[in-house]
Amino acid sequence: MRVARLTVDLMRPVPVAPLTIETDIVREGRKIQLVSVRLLSDGTEVVRASALRIRIDPKEMPAIANGPPIKLPMPEHCSPPDFFATETPFLKGIEMRTAKGGFRIPGPAAVWYRAARPLVEGAEISPLIRAVIAADFCNGTSSVFDMSDWTFINADLTVSLGREPVGEWVLLDAETWIGPDSVGIAAARLADGQGYFGRAVQSIIFEKR
Image (tube, rainbow, N blue to C red; front, side, top):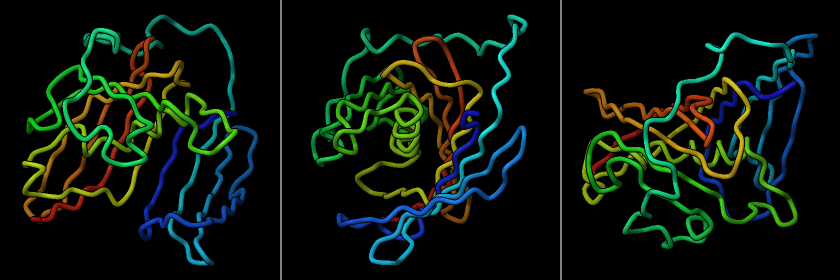
């Protein structure tokens, strides 16, 4: 089986402290498996997630089964952003290359992301984890308001995968929409060097600084 959908709900701020992980198989079937994951800090749940896994059935598929090709430049032909990429310890471990738009330019944008170091010491970062790391940048990649005047944090993240990602670089081709009640969504198409492979969606809370 492989992960076809991952949904993460951010219950509380995750502290920089020892954390406990609990997992459980909610449904076990011949074709589908649903796994729940809880992240706890000192016994308090801070993150809840579910992963939908579907049985792999390798077979020869029609050519149309492949995702659409990328019409944006590859990361080696893009430039890094000109700000904030080293402001926090987490961002120091992420490489970025801007393919379209920009962080300070309201509107749709596309950025390549690459996790440059392990999140957990001694644990290799899989292409799936690279895709999820990049997907969490939806609300930062595209924007509708000036970042210096507004905050827009995500309360969740859902990643759906049409196929398994490959390689180290992940493209977020993202767009953000806001409703009249200060709640919106940030969504992106996900791609790697072989083309588009998935989608990511976040629920966004907009607040004036």
